[in-house]
Length: 201
Image (tube, rainbow, N blue to C red; front, side, top):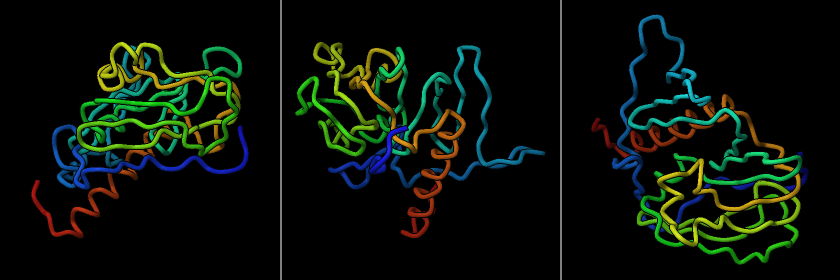
């Protein structure tokens, strides 16, 4: 794994009350435990080699062949040392409908973990795009030039953001590690909501 700086967390700029799946980030109901259940979320393996995650008002399928970053990026190793990178469904829900993106980093340039290499704009928020590995930047996702909404509608397929040749950041995890990251992230949202006195379901 790459050493040095840790990849930054996914940070959105714009609407402070970004929405998650059509509901404000603060408006997430605490799920009930199932009888005999041990966790706050339910995880099962889907037939399509994905993990189904459900927590509060958010549900998603997470491909098991990816690695995931705490900043809500996924990484897929296409061939040894060649990584395709995209945003997870959770990240795209925070951004809302994708309207524009741009990469200021030239193809072939050296990048390091945490470098700001571009930006992406949604109707709900705007965020920088960061390097989640160190090595060479191999360029943006070509399909996005034809249809930028693929980031939202097909985040694990044609909606990938960029490719890099090198090594991922040290803090990337497998799908089960990302389940824990999602749970901790939503816990913080719930805590923020309750601290603000918003007790609506």
